[in-house]
Image (cartoon, rainbow, N blue to C red; front, side, top):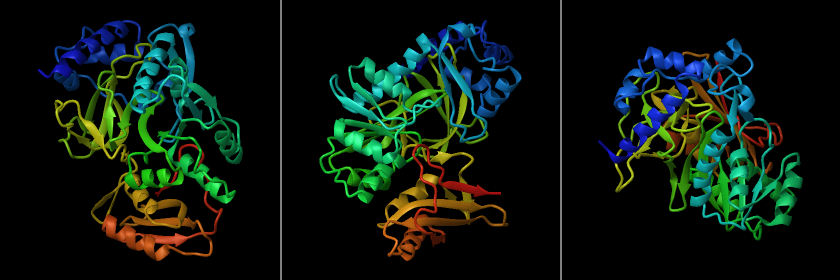
Length: 417
């Protein structure tokens, strides 16, 4: 039995022993799986334990208002409130007690560690500080590590940029989209970013940080800064991080999560190098655990040289969502693949990709704004899309300012049904 498996199984069984009697949601699932007393192996766990889905959690909160039946302890012991962004459907409320929130923070401290953060550094948080998790865990963990955390919610992009340049932080935390948006504001205002003081831009919330073309555009826009990718979810917590010398690879926090990659809609493990859905089990966060949670994230697991196969990483980061993948004339198309091509073409600004499924054969159109309204890179963009994706995709230049500006999670992938 692999060393990591030997470590994960007892932690999983301790979690189950804690939640089995008081967590109504999982008591029913564990009882049906004959797992109230734990499992003999991780293989036994995956064979008998049913999945948990986001739709199931949303339905549970409707049927058991206001917080559902997933809480292990009395409601009055919970101190943190968060809500998912709702990009995948109905928003879900997620609560943590003090210990479970600290578990989340300890996991985020790993991201800071591999981003080379040190006590006395400063970090600028360019997010709205709303109810969704955003960078809340990054903020709180930074404070515990002795990093000066600078909140920048409630400001316009112009004011945020000037605030950032005045403070000269070493770290910026935001989405890939917003890092590019701030750079665009700087260009419009003729503000130089040459001496911003930034050395690391930690991105999350959407694919992009592990996509070479997106990362290159961000680093070109912010001279002297390197992009560090990570991903997580409100209901799960921080899951992965990248290393400076492995920018296209997301390493998973295997000590905190039991990670599976399965063929969508099945219990079939995909081979290393193939694409599947990431399924996660929290090995902590006892107050609000998730067992075999179908995240909906499409990933490509790969082996890490010198480590056991079960300690896989994710090549290319998060490729997209299971529901977002479309097959167009025999080609599997992901949002991150289109984003990579668009970001490689000079002169292209904001864009949206529309996938029309209302016809017998899906059709894709990329509508974009030109950074210079007097120029039209349509032909170059169309040529690059066809060369890289092996299908013909229609492109259309639209007037500057006609597409939405995204300051948090971007919604550039529109499926018309």
